[in-house]
Picture 1 (cartoon, helix red, strand yellow):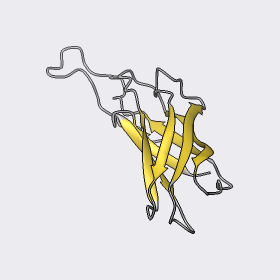
Picture 2 (cartoon, helix red, strand yellow; picture 1 turned 180 degrees about the vertical axis):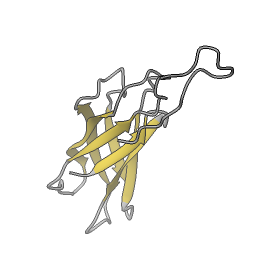
Picture 3 (cartoon, one colour; picture 1 turned 120 degrees about the vertical axis):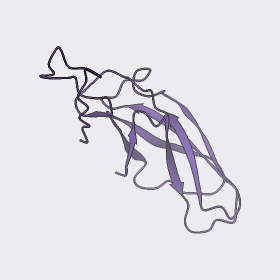
Length: 130
């Protein structure tokens, strides 16, 4: 399935849908999110909606809000974005209707081995890209 990546500080992730074939008519497509190991309300905002394709339009997107959690966590989490149904118009759903959305942690790693008498910030920043 398709994969999207967002940093937890991005605020949102945009999921793009692409239409092929005859694009002469109006089509609306229902979508929703659901959890993987990401928790709704902690890592992202669970949501659903409809994407509208106007005649001639080949691509459209919807946005899902990402929640920043400032505490350090190793790795990242993911949720699913799914195409649910064609609400209006003449279109067939694709074989693959679900995308993995990975939220990468960008909080700094806690300080280790910093002398107590050190001046300045008491935090060693190590960015983890997993």
